[in-house]
Structures are given as structure tokens and as C-alpha cells.
Amino acid sequence: MHWWLPAKASTFAGPIDGLFLAILIITGIAFVLVEVGLIWFIVQYRQRPGRKAFYTHGNTRAEVIWTAIPAVTMVALGLISNHYWVEIKGRLPDRDSCEAVRMADDLSGGGRQAGHGGRLHDPQPAPRARREADRGGTLL
Figure 1 (cartoon, one colour):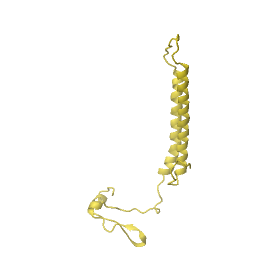
Figure 2 (cartoon, one colour; figure 1 turned 30 degrees about the vertical axis):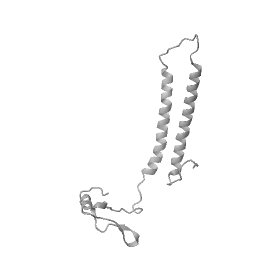
Figure 3 (cartoon, rainbow, N blue to C red; figure 1 turned 90 degrees about the vertical axis):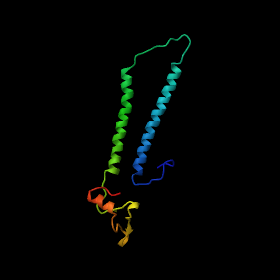
Figure 4 (tube, rainbow, N blue to C red; figure 1 turned 120 degrees about the vertical axis):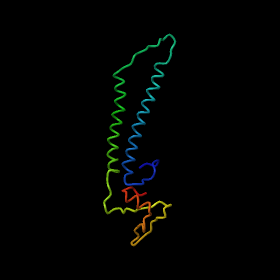
């Protein structure tokens, strides 16, 4: 997408790069606004001779606004990114699109080898792997 992003490594790279760019723009705008406001308040309310400090309890309306804006932004970004999360992680592969390969760990003596047609198969599962499979465990 852009020269400073890594090369696309999957078919989902475009939408994820777009989401990254949207978050970068939103946080960049928020950063600039906060810094401009900070500088303005520093200059406007600096100490001056003969001027007495004014103390205030707060402004509930302003506090609700500056809390609601980031909250709404975060919820919107969460809903948008949820769409991409479901699109990427929510799909199960077709039954015929992948072949499950049982692998035993290196220390148990089991292994894999290519069989007919270049397909991988385990000639004889290691004893530990058979026990795990018999108990319904996951083979690593």
C-alpha cells in the first residue's frame, strides 16, 4: 500500500493496512489537537505579574465530551476491526483444501515421510502420540 509498510504477505493485507492507516490518521489528528491545545493553554494562562490564579471545581459537560469522543471512536474502531477479524479468523477451510498431518515430537522416534503423490504420512505413530490420540488429546 505505502512504501513504509512491509510487503503484502497475505490476501488480507490490503484491508489490514487500510485499518492501520485509519487508526494512524485518527491518532495523528488527536495528537496534533492535544498538542495545539496544550500550547494554547500554556501561553494563554501563563503567570503574569498582578494576575491572581482562579481555581475552579471542573466542568462536567466538558469532561463528558472529552470522555465520550474517545469512547465512541474506540467502539467504532472495534466494530470495524471485528469485521476484518471475522473475515480472517472466522472461516474454516474447506474439508478438501488441507490435509491433516500427524507429527510426533523429535524425541519419541516418530517422523513423517512423503508417500505416493508427494503426500505426507506418518508411517507409524510414536507410542506417546498413540496414547494421546486414544485419550482424545491433541497431537503436537
